Image (cartoon, rainbow, N blue to C red; front, side, top):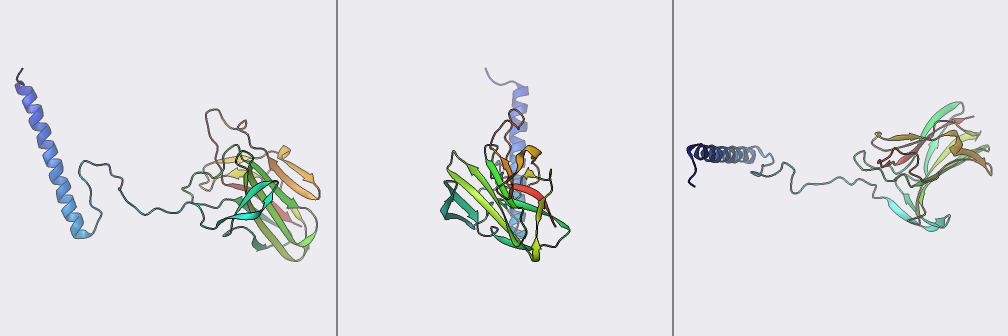
Length: 216
């Protein structure tokens, strides 16, 4: 059946709109060439085909020769073993873990076990170490900071300050008092990897363990 007049009008209008759109794109591309701006491809999505991408994780990731608790251990040489000077009667916030781009997805999921060891004896140099491990993958990530002062000092963990958080600061999970205990002269913050604390149908991802310590 030959198309009626209404169909002819729709086809004519549609073809005219396509031609006008192509003319507009061509004119914009000519202007872009003159000004040095990025050209647009007609009838294609706005995302570029090729672009430079930021590295989301530090290039300093390295695998240690020795293992911890039978797990292969990864560190970030750009951040691990940093040294900070502290003063008595001051409170400090520490963030241990993967220091990556704020745009990156969390490095660890809800199945990651977290263990942080804080010395509680007096000393002029003290080391705080945190492990993020997965028995399934037989590997763990380790981050360490050193606190130093002119005279011996003691580190006191501020109870209730332990929080798992992402670099984007969009996700946080406070840890409870039951996750903290004294073991062999150390304060230990321990959370076994589990999805029980997360809302149904959700995936919690994080990068860091944030704690506060007081120097006495």
